[in-house]
Image (cartoon, rainbow, N blue to C red; front, top):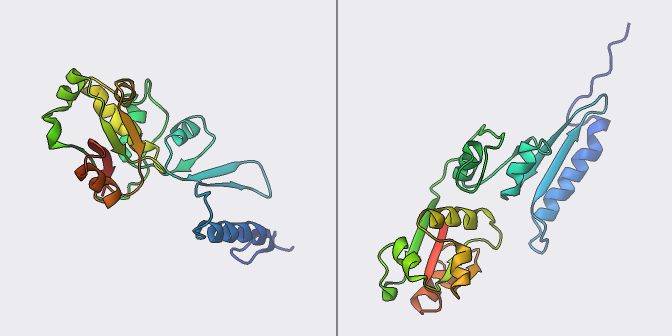
Length: 199
């Protein structure tokens, strides 16, 4: 009696089309002119039910996608956001059904710098003054940082929305804080604060 057919990776015919599209997607992402960088991969069986979904991007909405079983595995930075989701604290009003399965360690910190010329020595001082800060935070490609910044500000009596309501401005800037487009603007008095994270 013949053995049942068992696909053999990576050259089995059932793998050729999926592998081709993974290669195409990889090539597209490596093209600097291609703007779509978030990647979803859904793996399904040729022989039966079931699916397994990955999401490869850094966006806080994926927490709800995992919680509601639309995505099985994703990646998120910073890890503190996932901890808040698990506990139902900070940015989350109730616990989410998510778990940490691996951590990629790196030296990533949340840091707040406010111009000396303003005379503030604490975040509470800014809240009391209702000062219209011109803030640079990371966020053009990173939706997690403004959430983390807002959690810290709320613990000290105000939020990014309050800063806007007081007449301030929030700019979402992708470069690292020490980049001339950020620290240089602070030095020139074009902005008042850098509230951000970065290595």
